[in-house]
Length: 207
Image 1 (tube, helix red, strand yellow):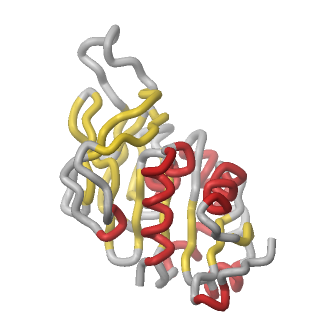
Image 2 (image 1 turned 135 degrees about the vertical axis):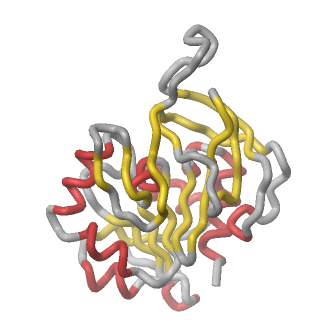
């Protein structure tokens, strides 16, 4: 897809690999007037102004898919804003308990499995809408405290020094984080209605 935003300094790429919820992200960007290129080409990714790193499914399979084209090495070298979504966020961490997976190591955290005390009221995976609070980043500009986003996941990133939004399911955990040029959101922006669209707009507008 030709990117009509390139002349505005907003050349956006979505990393192409076998664990991405790519089509849904493309549609969400189109709804806010952003055309994006889907690519696994290293030079195209490095030349982009913004990079989106989506993800669904299982961590070790996702990492193996990245390694097939050395994308696991490329992502760590990127200097422009990068947004990891759901499993994409988790893969930015050091390690995931999901099949004991070594991840990209950008955020010094281990991704953990939910261990509910009340297995009736706290189902795993968490599926559905949940609130964001303690919002701390330009990525979340214009959002009200306790805005709702859509989550689908069994693993979570603990609260840490890079946490920029918190949510609570079983226990409080990182709904979003930011370290340098790397941002991650555990929820699905592309399924989070107007709140998700606002977050995507904020990401595109980051300097």
